[in-house]
Length: 169
Image (cartoon, rainbow, N blue to C red; front, top):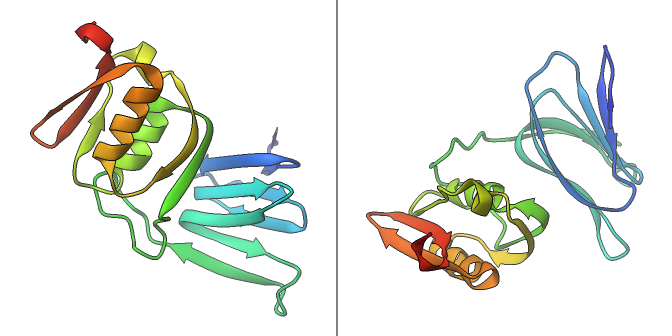
């Protein structure tokens, strides 16, 4: 990743990455293979694997360039989704994959859909790393899966789902 005075840039050569780009006057350029995205703020998913290659705008706005497209590039805008608001149906994937992502960030992603909210009070639990594929729109199911994977307990009350260490510690 390059953070220079006049620009910010990242190149994904292999693997998967999600970039949450902070608003800044300097543009942020993400490249993967022959695709690029240029934005000043937003959330961009990048996949560069043998089986899949894409750059996808999750939130905000970006100019995405795909040489295979006849026009060459296009501007796209995804509606901002504030925490707790339902995600736009066209942007919400039915399944999402995480690769070495903090449990706190997985919970934040799930909480964007609204409804039940996953709460993690213990900083050590929040830092656990998650790798896997999960269905979207089912915070309770996600919490149960994560609890089983990490030996945690699920404590649900009044629209909140707490993930705590086994034994209530």
